[in-house]
Length: 304
Image (cartoon, rainbow, N blue to C red; front, side, top):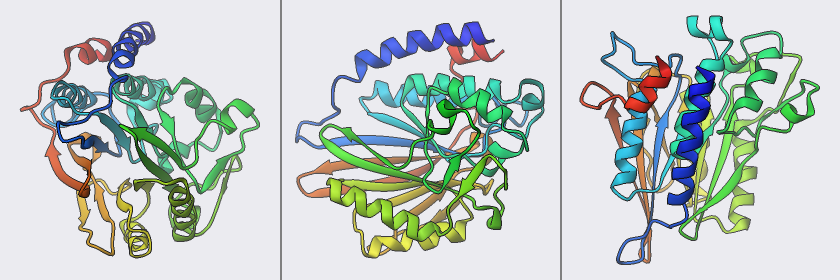
């Protein structure tokens, strides 16, 4: 599997590198970016006898959006390395390779979930993190495996630019007191809301045009964090994981939107952001990933 994955990913990187040089703008000089969010994915292929979900259909959706002129970022709300029969066989290697395929199509940002640390040993994390081409992001935990290349590889909140607009993303994961895994190779910070506000304030100082959170928390915790929008109006939404069915807590002028998909990419979220002279517009829709979306043939070849 590995050789076919690497060859295909290199080709995709060349294509993406050429396409990424042009900012996505419209005739009225607006700037657009589309986020595709999924979470809690334990299989590299479709589920329910092939009828629902699967990375192959996500790949097709991303390609379709890009063909329509959209600048795409992929977001993952955590829980993918474990638990699954596949990961018992390959120790998570297969799912990282599958997610690398998506990252080669469009930049992918991933927050670790509690299941990434199911193993009491750090061996799986030490092996899988360096193999990841996608960005791991988390602000309230630090790896302490003793392997410097691994311990320093997870990013904290960062900004990225699309068409001259600055976007900030932060990541939060479950503390052991709330269901996270307590491991001797991990150090956690307390206080989700305090940590989120600290990072949001830094993004504001940097001049961010839009801020969002990528989390693996209980919905109630996400809703508390979402209330920070009252003091920080550029904080627009949170996309997360941990729950396995679709969740939505609609935002308003004082509360950020909160969205979570169904596990194994059975239902995902598409968030479209438009920056224009009149302001920032954010719209979202949930998309059922089913047989109406073809499985990407290139992905299927390497996943078989």
